[in-house]
Image (cartoon, rainbow, N blue to C red; front, side, top):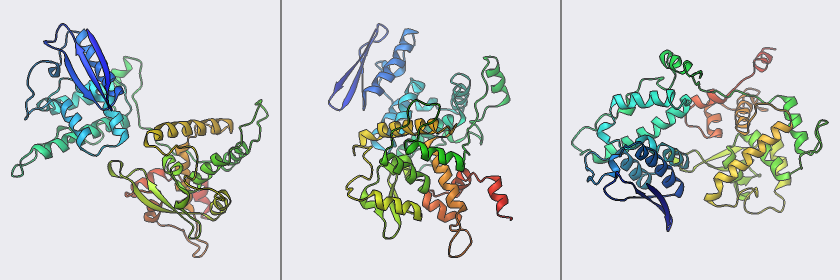
Length: 384
């Protein structure tokens, strides 16, 4: 038994040999990580005496391809986000040996059940897996179905509403393993005034009494915190900003949205509140190019930069004693501030629901309801 991965140019070639195989099996992947992940799954199957169809010397059927081949074709020919590509890398082992004809309602139903009972995944993770696989099958069926014929039903689209939630029977099966059913986690954490004061104190280098040293003050990181809190930009949108995208004269940011359809850039304009506008004016003196120096400007550096900054925010919030708060919660807080903002000229609310969605980069107003965690005391204060 041998599973080898060799780098050939910009791709990785997987080579599998085993006594059960009539000949060595080769397959090329875009990355070494994908090749090794799939190789480990195949090795585990072969060790149990299971030979997947793609390892046999059997010609593939054009009208009934392996789902593995459909996925590979999609990743090479269709627009795909980095997150979907990473997810598919982890999913490859779940699709070993399955042909398109085997993608039946019964298989899909059992697949979802296995994700719950065997993998113990959260409902949101299950929906992501089913969603990306459903898009791939839709794409394939549209391509291969003649124009004069109806497109066959996609079994992944036949799942009922709420399929990702754990049923009573599934909860009982998990109870036998002493595991609880997973549930979706809805973030509604607001930033209290005292918590914001402690965060700002930590950013300026103020030392806690129970710590030996303070956090090192960093003008750029403080500006990043201010920017996200007062605009609601996503982390990647914020650190990718360039100086020329800040229009202080008109009081707006020209943002390259990072959540467009299938990873496309979705530009939008975000207004600047007066306090942030003043801080940016002082911050921009003498700066050129990127607004922040956290990112090297390369596509390859995006994931590492996001992870590094997210970890840095976690350290900040921990030091400031703001429990269970994350960088993304700043976006929730900013949404609430846009919703609650009063117009100095009209006296009423500054922005409508549609306008808040435009600021935050959403096309569905339901996203505003999901993000707007309004405090009861703030609502009660409006009655005064």
